Image (cartoon, rainbow, N blue to C red; front, side, top):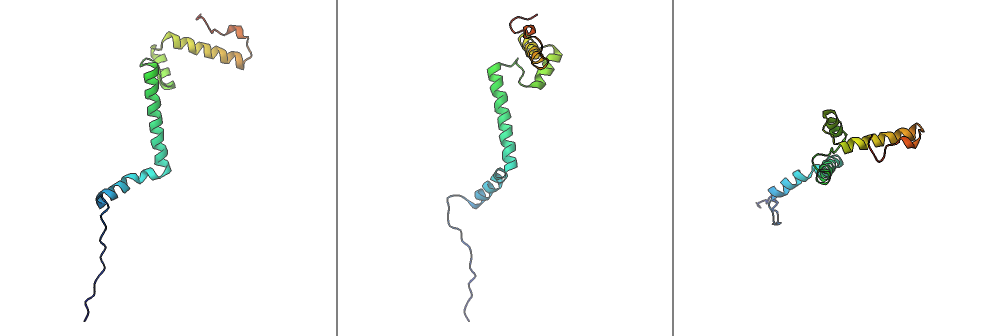
Amino acid sequence: MSEQTVPRFIPKPTGFSTFSHRLWHIVSLPFRRSVPRLAFVTVVWITTYNVAVRLWKGPDHPINRFQWRRMENAGTLPDELLQKKKTVLDYHKSRFFNQDSAHVSVLAPD
């Protein structure tokens, strides 16, 4: 009677363990899909933008409309930015309502 041998898989050495290979596969799996990749890129973009504006404009400058409105309601918005708001609003009023452009206060505050 001949003895039957059962084939057995013996992995070849690849330089790293099977556990680390499986762990890397599990960790990298969400990044292979488009939705998590898009979410990750969005978070990186928003963070980079906020840090860059904070370094460029300084800590007292509002980064977005939410901070602008909050600082405006609290009365901590600098006079230069209030003048900028007034200038932009005057410009838009003159463009949309065909008013005389002489009313636009570009250089000096009232």
